[in-house]
Image 1 (cartoon, rainbow, N blue to C red):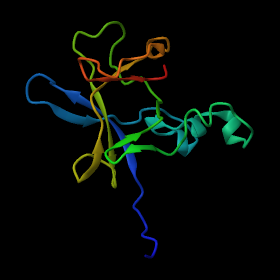
Image 2: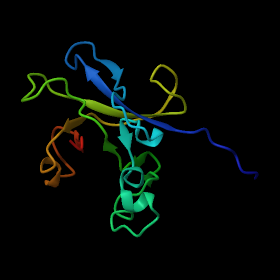
Image 3: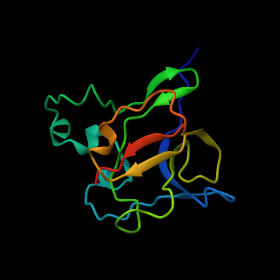
Length: 149
């Protein structure tokens, strides 16, 4: 069987607005001003962010956080991505729950066909928050993601 060329996949961080009544998905747009085009994205892999990996030097985290998704089984992929900006509008504790999803698509945007959509995630700015291990049978069924701020 000949090699079939696959389309480039885009990973998009989306915010879910009005979770309780009629939820709508809004794409989080990069708002920074980095001169490196690879850094001008909301979600980044470790290899793009790490200066040692960029210089092709040895890095202990390269194996811990691979750039390519890890195939768990037929229906699950595991991505290792870090948020490159603070996706929250205001400082302090938010009054509404902050719910985000990662969307995998063959094109930019969420209007067309989507290849995969993650579970709802709580995105936070506290690096200590993600260190707790979450039970696999958690009752709320939601994952944690670190915004890297």
